[in-house]
Length: 118
Length: 118
Image 1 (cartoon, rainbow over the protein chains, first blue to last red):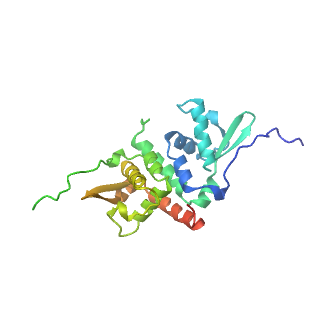
Image 2: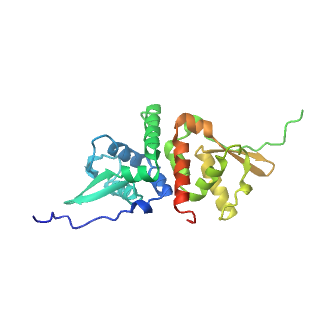
Image 3: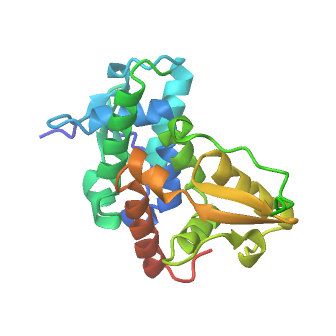
């Protein structure tokens, strides 16, 4: 069977390299929180960056996804020219139990508090 | 009874003005996490900044405390020329239930994982 044409790979921190400070920094931005919230939906996996219609430029979008990847919050793989994204839920849960869920809960509460914010 | 000489006061966000993004940003720094961890100890209240012997300059220390105050994580009052600090635990808990505790738990776990980090 031929190997899929998927040569380029992106650097990710190992589980051990993921720091709490880096994760909190990655989550401290409204656009990145929005992406993480969407990736956390049940059944969602391997979403292309272009699926997220963030109200920022393409290069800013790329930057946000890079911050999420480099902090260990998401995993990105190339599929052709697109990058597919998924949440590193298992790694985060193993390192910082309950943290992701409490951030997502807080995000939802804040969204209810000020639905038109932004 | 004479009013205590405590004229200067510091600006704080109201509970409603506290944002999740601001809180996560404030907590995304090792020095600030260290301060919050110390202020979260049971029975600890109104600690002077100088109590925290952070391995950074005085002005950097002042900066870190300002970020914590402006994000709504801590409350600061002047006592003479010193600033006394306390955690806004009730406000944070009301806005984002469980968040502070999950961050502190994550911080403790990370400290155990790499006790000599820094």
